[in-house]
Structure formats: C-alpha cells, structure tokens
Length: 178
Image (cartoon, rainbow, N blue to C red; front, top):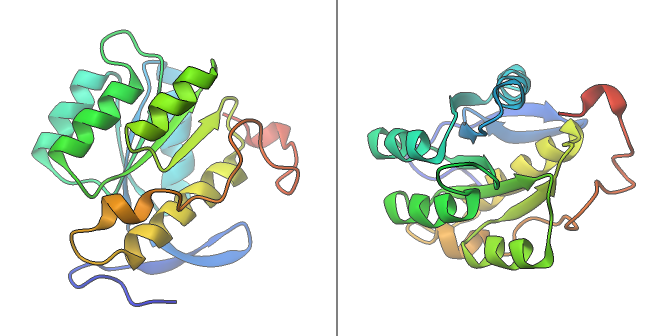
C-alpha cells in the first residue's frame, strides 16, 4: 500500500475482512429522508468514519463551504438540489472530493449524468452495507493514491463495481440494508 498524502492521517480499519486505510476519512452524508440519513451516519461512524449529515443539497453546500470532506455520499432525488447537481457544485467548492451517489430510482440518463458530474460510484437503494463499505474503501484508496492536486482525475473509474444491484460476491444481507 502506498503512503498517505502528506498531512493526512490514515489508520487501517477492518472492512469486509480487509484492512483498509479508510478510517479518519470524513464523509458528508446527504439525504432528505431522515431515517436513511441517520442510519447511514450511524453505520459509517461504527466503521470509524468521521461523519456529518445534511438533509438537503443547500445544507450540504453550506457545510462544504465551511470545511473539507473526503467523500460526499448523496441521494440523487432531493427536493431542493438533486444529488447530481450537488456533485457538480461540490466539485466546484472542493475539487478533490470523492463523490458517491445513491438512488432508489435508477435510469440510464441518471447514470450518465452522475458519471458526467464526476461521481466515482453510483449505487442503488436499498444499500447493502458491505457494498457501501467496499465502495468507500475503493474511493479512499483512489484518493490516497492520487498525485497532489489530481484527485478528481484519479477518481474517474476508480471504483470497481457494477451499476445496479449489489454484486453476488456481497450477497443479499437483509439485516445490513439501508
């Protein structure tokens, strides 16, 4: 494994049985559904992520202006700003942020728009936590390995997941879905 970028403190955490340098990563979780937002926040905190939550795109943009986050995990369908437009705006504020979008309403157009907005990953709801953890680990690896100032370009195609339902490897895990 490569050393973290200067100024970053990474400590390994167990994710799906693998030791990954994802702890101490900050994640901004954005979802207009309160229960989903809370459950995602708690699940990520239990895995060692530093988590902040926002209930709207506008609230998320305010938080992004105040401080840097490593990863933005956002629902796509929200009333004020959709997650795809949020990704575009977030990239303007924080160019090196890792962008992961989730949706319960996948369309071919939304997938294309998501990746054009700079998303490193696109996941379908209900989220299976092992898949989410693996995705965030892959985004963390890409962020860590990116040359200084080139995180956005390095993230493109960094996540090795199929768009759509969770892979068979993770298997359906009813008790870990969000």
